[in-house]
Length: 219
Image (cartoon, rainbow, N blue to C red; front, side, top):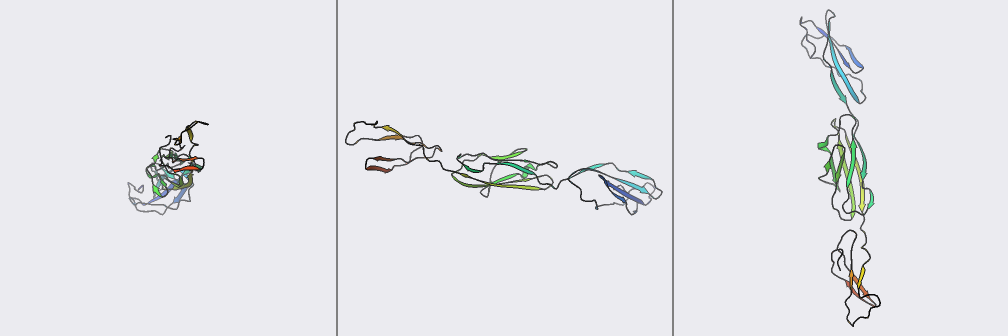
């Protein structure tokens, strides 16, 4: 409300916003609020604005200056990981982000995994989540708003591929060993993903069938 005159003269007002101005607006009574909303479409950036008042006799006075920021550009999201086929059962799911003007609204940054919101770790420039997952297909959506209200979304997928068990290690009998009529066979089984493992012994034309699953590394 710069439109105030000690002599109660009518006043004209002149708005200045960056390199733009309103020109002298129609005179109003002293003490009246004045608005101007016909600023041309401003590019993103920081602008200083102020107001000048002029009375009936041509005397003028400037207001103090204020700063405004215009931001209509969405944040940038980069480096989504993992993608494609992976074997790790505990992948680090993450993405980086940045915003050049108003800054990231960190309290509203979020990640969903297969449609469910997860308790991801949010920092100044990235979001991450490090779950233990079963083999299968996964879809990640990261949503990043800035303080000005612009929102960017990144969507990517990855697949955890199940790895085959390691080749069993034969323990006994030894190669070319002389055995009794009812020998006991022993082997150690393991899995690179530490899954439980079933063993199947084959001796000549005989087999054990699939035995009860045991922990990886068991004999």
